[in-house]
Amino acid sequence: MTQKVALVTGAARGIGLATAKLFLQNGWQVAMIDRDGPELSSATAQLSNAKAVECDVSVPEQVDIMINAVLSAFGRIDAVVNNAGVADFLPIEDTSFATWRWIMDTNLDGVFLVSQAAIPALKETKGAIVNIGSISGLRASTLRVAYGTSKAAVIHMTKQQAAELGEYGIRANCVCPGPVKTKLAMAVHSTDIISAYLNAMPLNRYGTENEIAEVITFLCSDKAGFVTGQTIAADGGFESTGVGLPALRK
Image (cartoon, rainbow, N blue to C red; front, side):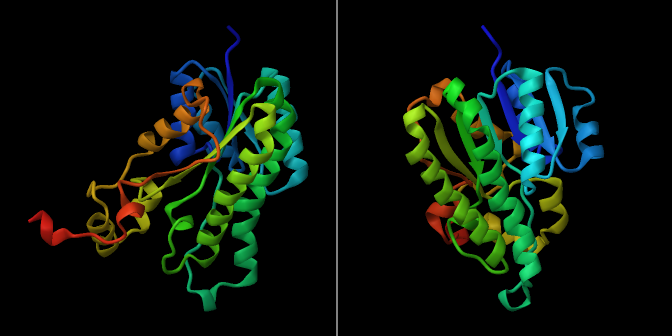
């Protein structure tokens, strides 16, 4: 059998890197995409069956070059994981239009551009798109007017993709991570923030990067062959419950 090929954006670190490694463990070849060239080179240095392609997904010309490079290297694309994203948490009145556009450029425009550019290749393989949203796109929170809105838009874009691309056999789904124990999260989440999250989640813990990667790779696999247009919250129950009940745990 010809090895399947996954294209993963934002693959230099975090959930993207964990997803790329899990694809490789499952026997896929992986195109690892990131705009941070040095970090991407470091991440792929010890990985076989992986190709690093430096690309800013918010720039149409770079996206076209990147897709051509992936196809030249592997000859096919079976799955696209739109994971690249940025964030800046500010009050509404302090969010400049430049900040708004910076977040939308990557989080929303990047998903649109990469998915659109990959459609011809995905038609050939009847492949899958998995967009990475966020719990912030499912429920409002403070300081997330740009980030949360961008992720809510990604959730709806996923439904559009499923509706329009299904006739080609292309599936599209969205994974919305809740609090995940990444280096970045641990660096910026204070003790009070961590406590608040734990109290609001039935599982009472942060998720891991690999747990999110497991959901992503499942949705890209043949095991999810009849699943499309869905939004999966991988969040320890955070979105379902809304408020924590810490007193009841005692």
